[in-house]
Image 1 (cartoon, rainbow, N blue to C red):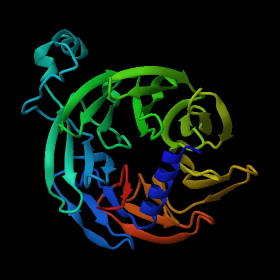
Image 2 (spheres, rainbow, N blue to C red; image 1 turned 180 degrees about the horizontal axis):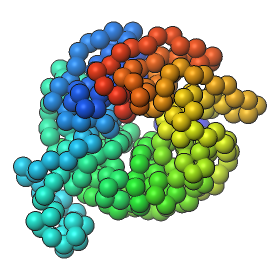
Image 3 (cartoon, helix red, strand yellow; image 1 turned 90 degrees about the vertical axis):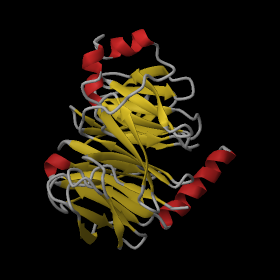
Image 4 (cartoon, rainbow, N blue to C red; image 1 turned 90 degrees about the horizontal axis):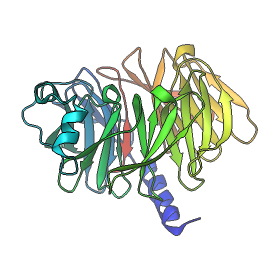
Length: 338
């Protein structure tokens, strides 16, 4: 195993064991902050229709994306994009380009204060942060594009076409790149943030939605629609290594070397797959299980039907506790604060 990856694994394991949890609460325009014991620390206000969120723990920051659009205050053309390219991206009509923008909000995770608000070309679905915390990437499903935020300069750096309906993104600590799932044409794009370049795209079975990267194994674990299945892909070649048909409108996913978890929203089930034996277990915790994340000895799952966070035992899928939230919780973040 690569030494740098070993060090990263140790850091992530330590972080998960004592992590705070941040729950973006959609139309409540707030994010709920819980400590390592799931006690309420406070709420971050002023986050319009907050959906996507990722953490930059060494910077002590959260990067939040709004699922709504608004009239722009001022949005500048990224330096790496020419005026012609910028106009073409917005249909060549400067008036139309300025009609509405999305919003990325940078928040101090400890004080809950807003550090910066950055306008981006469209509504934001999901967010990822590079392992070195230099870049944030946000997906724009309505534009078939993603935007890169330079976290040193705190500004929009580039907007790039990846494919139809870019859904989710994950950062690769080995290469420094991002993977982006394009649900509309069943592809995954690999993107280099430093050069603002899409390097390649490979096809998958079904339309990939949420993903998790296992960097040491060089594996991407994806939840796909049509058919509803979980697939494990070789992150370097794109080859399918494992596939599990689940059904039920798959959404959230998480995994480690031995186990895969997914939320079969249409079946009202959380599904656990033992990768060694192929054995599966299921639990009906509540309606429409949605986003999920492994956090130390817990599996955190939200619902798209009711405002709640479920804390499950990842070994048995038994419900350990349920935490009421102000609204539907979307891309939850677990991070150890600095």
